[in-house]
Each structure stands twice: as structure tokens, then as C-alpha cells.
Image 1 (cartoon, helix red, strand yellow):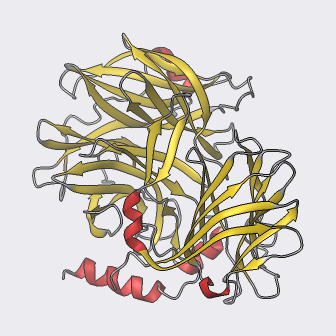
Image 2 (cartoon, rainbow, N blue to C red):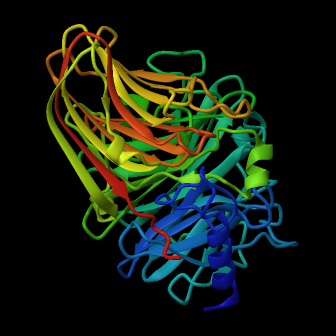
Length: 488
């Protein structure tokens, strides 16, 4: 084992007792992580690159970290892929980008930071080391006619091939208007012609969702007859908000939009990126941000984690299907199953046998006409700490309630809610992944919420089914303890 691997193992052993640190979500051995980058399957192996500061758990001196997996679940750290280097276009940071297969040559496109430009690197040894192109920057900034209105915001290239042409999307903004995605075309991946804006936002419109002032981290997904654009939204203060999707048709180098919506809810899932694997699946990861003061992350020695891998598909309605990758089933350990539970306000159901901070829960519920019920996770025995996942039939709303999630005053405790399409009488399926401070909830295969919770008490491990109003028939509840992905 080399020195870097020894250090990684030592660091993981040191952090193994951190009760906030996820154990089946990918994150580096220590320090800072943000956006997933360069997702690609190469010779059967999944490669995950990511924004990384190897020196401290703060956003600074951004490199590209690199990990590899054969099963989407267990990961091996590899040496740094990209390092900002004095005298180059990436001297102030190697920001987000993508990976492609250029006729057998793995090639990265990424943003050099300040000024924001597009850089390229290639590998001759199956993605282990990368050679910086002597032609960098291959795009030296936004188109001249738009430069003044972008305020220098021009980043996160996403590249794909269609026919004989390569296309490249860049995230940017138009001052006073909103976010914008810029489309480029190339025949050789080196010389790029700016075509036009592929999609333009309007920050004055707030329905069905506000599209913000700046767009970054674009993705182009092709589902045959329809295509999808993913991008992440900032406000005027450069605060990170949420990822959006727009379905439509990409034809004659223009995009005709159809359906628009939030990709994720809860405020912690950001900057997603996708890959298309050998099975024909579209797999997505997103960065799960911290929900605590930076000083707590610095004290802990780490910040940021990836979501679970999510399978993305297109529904006939134009909405996206979002499901956890079935490979996660390999982590299932001890299992409990409960059926035909008549839930009402007179009795809660405590699952004392499955008290844990690393669980998968699958609950199938028959919705009543006037009910309010849910699951409590990470509960202390006296209820001082608890996080509730609640469904309210009158509002058709699913919520994560965090006001009691922690006794620590330096962590976020705001609630989040989203209105579902399900009506009374339909089934509600909740697929929940709890991993220490990470909580992800998949609802009915199309709605996804992600949050962070930081219970302080070591006995905040309880799981409880409850009703606040009305009666509900719970068809089944499956609970699994999940194993760690790290082989210490």
C-alpha cells in the first residue's frame, strides 16, 4: 500500500467514531468536498471525480479528487487528478467539469478559475494521470457580445457528441435578466465555435419555480425523443439554491422546453452530474452540503459528502423518475419486516430492535382522506432529539421537520416541505436512507428530498411510526441496517 493509501486508512480509522460522519455515502478521507465532476464508466469501472481541497475542510485551493468503484457502492481513493498550478490557466483553482471518451482517449474539460475559462486534460494510462493541454485555455471566456453582462461568471463545461459534432454547454448569467446556458460546437474538441444561448432564464418570474440569477453545473441528458437539461441555481448574492431540470427537445441546435421543475428539495443537494453506464442507465450523484457552522466542520476535519447514486429516467408526464440505484441493496444487513399496521393517534409504533443511525426504510402506506402521519428517526428515548418525516393529506405535502433534530444551536433546524401529486386513496411509498447526519427520502419514485441532521446525543437512535391525525393503513414497513462502504 502506498503512502497516500496508508494516510487515507489512518484518517478513516481516526474519523470512524465521528457520529456525524456518513458511512455508506462517498466522501474523501478528510477535508473539503463539493461538486461531483467527470463522471464516467471506463473499462467497466465507475470513476468519480470531485471538487476537493486536500488541505482543509473549507472551500479553497480547489483540486480534483478521484475515486473508483466496480459496483457503485464501494470506492477506492486514487491520486489527485487535477492540481492548480502556478503559471497555468487553472492556477487559482480547477473548478467543475466533465469527462468524455475521445476515440479511446479519456479527456477532461474543466473550469480554470479567475478568470473563468475552459481547460482540457487527457490521460494515456486509463485515467490515473492527466496531461494538461498546451492549448489551454481552449475557451478563454464568455462570448464578447455577452462578456459585460456575465460579470465574469462562466463555468462548468459539459460536453457530449451528436453525429459528427461535439457540443459544449457553459453556465453563466445575464445581469438583470437571469441565468443562461451557452452552446458551443466543435469538430476536434480544441476549436470551439459559440453558437447561441441554449436556454435563458427570467428572474422576474417566480412560478412554477424561481430560476434565479446565475446558472452553473449544466448537464445534457438524452432520452431519445426527449432531452433534459439539468443546472444549478444561485441568487444575486451568489448563494447556492437548488438544481432545476427542464425537459424538451434538442433539434437543429436549439432547445424547445416543455416541463420545468426542481430536481431535489430540502436545500442540501446541489451541483448534480450524470453518467451513462454500460447498462444504458443514467446515474446521478449530487453534492450534499453541510448544515452546520463552518467551525464545526473545521473541528471535525471534513465537510461535504455525495448523495447515494440515483437512477434518472423520464416519465410519460415529462417529469423525471428518481430512484436509488439497486446496487445499494448489497449493503443490507439485518432486516425487519412489519405488515398490516393500523395506525392512529392512540398508538405509536416503536421499533426498538432497529435502533440505529445507519438504516434503509421502505414504507408503503394507503393514504386516508384526512390524515397526518409519518416516521421519526434519530429519536432520543425522551424525545428531546428527533427528526420527523411527515405526510399531510389535506395539503398533499411531505415534510422533513428538523426543529428538534439536534440540541446543538450551531446547526440548521429549518423544516422543508414539498407538495406531491398523489391524492387521497393512492399509495404513498417512502424510501428513506439514513446515514448518521445524512437523510434522503425518495417519494413515489419521482420526488426526492435531502437534508442534514446532527443529533448530539449518542442515544438518539430511535425509530418510530406515528399519527397526528386520522387513521392510516400501513401495508408494510421494511427496515434494514446498512453496512459501511469502507473496508478498514
